[in-house]
Amino acid sequence: MITDSQLYSLAIFLGSAAMLLIVLYHFLEVNAQDDEVSSDLKDEKAGVGAVKPVGLESS
Image (cartoon, rainbow, N blue to C red; front, top):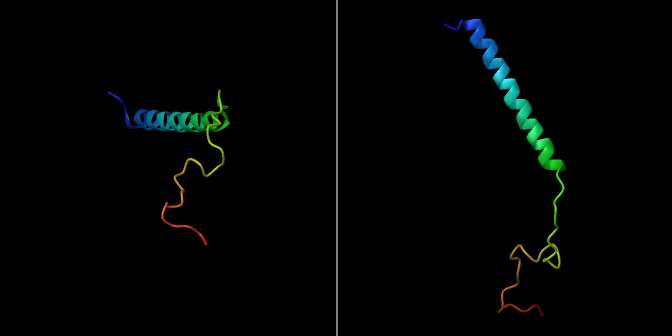
């Protein structure tokens, strides 16, 4: 049977390993470079749906 101190050590080890893997994943994800950059959008607002309604004209 596993003792309380062994269970405690196992929990500390597994929790620390999980946190290190999470930090490593985020570090790699932030610093990853995209293979191909899609330049379909003409400007930064072209893809967000910020379009003036048809019936409203500025005068």
